[in-house]
Image (cartoon, rainbow, N blue to C red; front, side):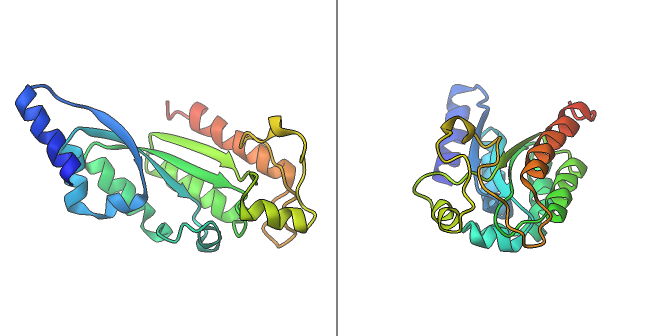
Length: 186
């Protein structure tokens, strides 16, 4: 709050508008006072890690502060204040299935989200997920670091009913990007 109030004061003293963007959690959108101050301070875009609609996937990724049932409310609260949303979405998180991925995609399109960044879950060195996949024999491309770019699948998806295959994850990522960029949004 102090930062936003300081930026508002800076604009008053300089007589010039200040426009800025940043990165935050979705929690900002649920704090009306903070959101109003952010908007008045010149905030016009925020990069937010929504990640998934799956509560299980969010819990496993330690993103319990995300409330999927409130995503639409958050997007609308930001939009009312002329703050554009750049949404970050992770495909293939443990606990996520194809249906929740599709539902998230449609939610973002329906709410005219400004930008959508899709990433494929990537088991990077030093992470718990990488160790779990390594021990389960499901880590692939171990020596091909050029593929660890969040656009390629580097693990064998679980046969847990999620419906994901390696090919499905990569094809879904590009289909979402293609639909978003060529579907009349830009």
